[in-house]
Length: 156
Image (cartoon, rainbow, N blue to C red):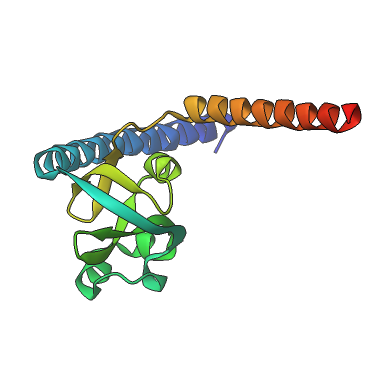
């Protein structure tokens, strides 16, 4: 086999891999789209009291056995975002996205949209940029207050 034959074989293999990835991506987007429409149909707005939130494996969290069994194997090994909340008289463990997880305060009542055991969004949820800006403002305010206290102690 000559060098040109090897190049042709490699190009054909790379083309086949790219075509396979394209169709796999197309299938994944269709599946994601159907899941999103199902979530949009099922979501309800309600008020919850957040007891605790943590990132852990689903096998280590107090989830119903049926939910754990239905999860794909890959999600059983991954760390996910869980929120333990009181919904009415019942305490439940809920699953959420990373961006929603970051916006949920602990030990507070919040208004959320829930689809089954999945928290879709939080009312008044801030974007990561807004949250960083708020943290910068808090730090600047704390520095200004500390500086004012130092000056007040010097003047006494």
